Structure formats: C-alpha cells, structure tokens
Length: 254
Length: 224
Image (cartoon, one colour):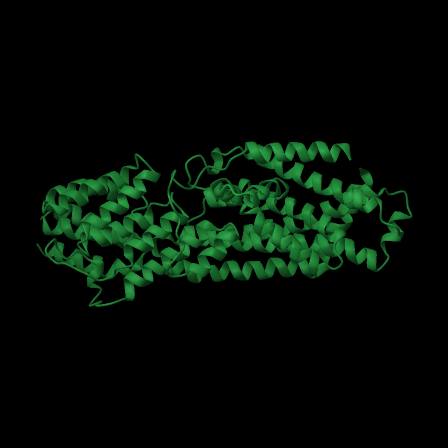
C-alpha cells in the first residue's frame, strides 16, 4: 500500500510538472471564459448558462486528461522500458498499477478543481454563484473521472497504442451515458438482438447515475440523490477495472 | 481475482438497483428534430442535456427576437387581445423540444406561453404547452397561475387575467418578457403603482433588451 501511495504521489508530481495538466487547466479556463459570450445572449438565464457551459467544459477536459494520463503512463513506461526499473525493486505489479491509476486520477482531479475555482470566480463576479449546484456538479465530474481512469487503464493494457486506447475509452464514455436508453430500447423492441444488448449494459459504466449536473433541479435529483451510493458504484466499477487490469498485467512477460 | 469478481457483482447490483430520477413523464415522447438537431444529439450523447436545452433556448430567443415583421421590437410587448399574429410558427415546437431536453426548467415554458398567449394571440397553443409542462411538474404554482391567466385573457377579461398572472410574476425566475407584458397590462388597467414597480424590477433584471421599454413605461406612468 505504501508503494502504491509513493507511486501515486510520484505520478501526480510528474504529471503536474509537465506542461500537460497546466495546459488543460489553461485551455479549460479560456473555454469557460468564452462561455460568457453565450451567457450574454441568454438574458435572464445567464447564470445557468455559465454554470452549464463551465461544467461541461470541465467534465470534457477532465475526462480527456484522465484518459490520456492513464493510457500514456502505462504504455510509455512499457515502451521506454522504465517499467523494469520499478518492477525490479520490491514493488508488486498490483501496487504499481494502483499507484499509476491513483496518480493519473489525482492529477486530473487537481485540474478539475482548478477549473472549477476559475468558474466559481467568474460566477461570483457575475453575482450568480450557488455553491450547492457547483460542488455537486464537480462531485459528479470527479466520480466520472475515477471510473474513466479505471476503464482507460484497462483498455490501455489490452490495446496496442495510446490512440486506440483513447478511442476505446471515448466510445465507452459515450455509451456509458446511453445505458438507460439502451435498456429502454431493448425492453421496447423485445427482439432477440436487442435483448442481447442488455448484458452489455451491465458491463458498461452507467454514467447516468453520476450525471448529477444534468438533474440539478429535477424532482428527486440534485442533493436529494443517494450521493454515497453513486460514490460506491464508481469505486466498485474502478476496482473491477483494476482487478481485470491486474489479471492481464500479471500474465505479461517483461 | 475473487475480490474483483465480488466487486463486479456489487457494481452490477448497484447499477441495476440505483435509478436516476426520470426526466420524462411516463409515455412522453422525445423529439430532437428541427433546428439544431445535430447539436442536440451530440450534447445528448455526451450526457449534457441541460446544456443542449440552454442552447435551444438561446436559439429560441434569437428566433423570436430577430425574425419576421419586427418593428420597434413590437412583438416583445403586449399588443392587446384583438391583434392576431400568424408569425413565429416555430415557437411552440421549439419550447417543446427544450421541455423534452430539460423537463424541470420552467423558464422557457413561461417565455413561450407569454409570447403565444399574450402577444401572438394563440392561447390554445399556450394552454397546450402549459398542460404538457404541468404533466411533468404537477402543482407548479407559476404554471397554474399562467393557466388561469391565459384562460381569462382568452375570454377577454384582462383584469382577471392580470390578477391571475401576478402571483407567477412575483415569484423569482419569471422571464423579463412576461414581466414586461404584465407591467404594460397593469398600465392599461390604470394600476400605476403595480406597473411602476414592475418596470423598476425590469430595470434591475439581467435581460437588458427590456430596459429601454421599461424606462419609457416609467416615463408614461409618471406623467399621470
């Protein structure tokens, strides 16, 4: 566990010192600022538009960052053979994987928090800052990023390149938002091929459970949702991904 | 491996047992057709329904603000129950699409109802919109007030319509366009105090499109 924590801290330091994470934050902050143009057009609902544009940008940037960090870290270390240096020491393979995973996630989470702070400042300047919806949206983004990091780590190990790993992660991410719709369609059509899709929805991450920012004012949504259950789901899903990654990684010959 | 299997089973159980609150009323249909269909579908697939609704509402504002026979912003104000408009046929379908994307956002519904009932003189369309919105949010005080107001306005009873509308207008989140109409209706009925209060509130609002008309309204009311 100590090894995993050390590796996670080291990965976080490495990612935040490189240009990638600061660039993500900078680019995200610029996009959030550009959201003001839409806000001006929105008249009465400017605050809502700023919050929605801002959180959408933050989620996209964070999930892209975590997918990139999780995919590149592992594959690059395997290609550059720096992995040997770590595994030749008394560091177990599962500890290495968990360290890498947590490091990638915490770097992306740092970026998400920084971008949310920028959004909060902008909303505060506009006089429309509501802490509850903002923090709840951030919580959903972090949980999604946690699940995405797990899925990206697993997909990076079974794919041949960073590009294919990121593409597969992107597909999983989009499908994860359609789990409810896929189940609905399978139920409605009732055909054999549609019914076969149902088990696929059990494998996909159900991001609609964590999409708190889309239900901020829905009846039964927002803060009245079972937030801890959502966190438990995200942790368990990522644990499954890491378990599978560990099983594949154990069989790899170095 | 056993731990991963146990976690998989637990995650699957949570996946099946946890249900996000439904965003659609039972049996309600969703249509993404029309203006901005690609954008809406793209945002939907990224799990950004609220943002899709926001953009659709901005497009509605642009459509209603810059289209057809716009003379001195006349369609933003109250023209009286006798003037008929056939224009802006897209107002109702656009509001419906916004409702499908974010059924718990009442602002676009109120905006559409204000435009259809009190300006374009199509109260049947406004009542249909209100009925659909109330099916999603039964008991919504603002929408119920508007149903009564539209009903009385259709019957030609302006005073009753304004009386029924005022509770909705005084609640936060009412579109400035609707507040502007209520102010003008109050002015026509000779309720200068209320009209003056509403015009002043409009001047405090974010929507600067109505600030000029509010200033003119204050001047008119203050003359008497």
